[in-house]
Image (cartoon, rainbow, N blue to C red; front, side, top):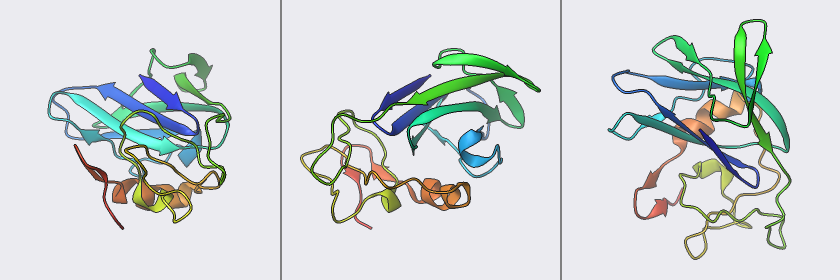
Length: 155
């Protein structure tokens, strides 16, 4: 399942009894190992990603086996079978700096925060220009972190 708010996409995948789940797609050139998802202990795996406006194809890879997300925005058949679709629309909820406001609690990658878009009143804000290249995604994703109740931690 994918939920979007502004430029943010939250990916949620249920796959109990696996050791690792990676998110792969157009946004990271389908590279394994760049975007490992985080388990919640009850079989769900989650990850949050900031993407520029557009339509992207993706899959989940659990212990080396690929899965399409049939609860996503749609399905396209490619050369290797069905790919899930996520659509990122332009955010209409932004502050004066162009930072989209997120109204749901999420884990925000630390490097996507800036002095112009701080964490304010429990709402995460991210710079509108924070569109990392596929090569930068791995370090951003891996450095993402938050206390479950307290939100993102200071860098």
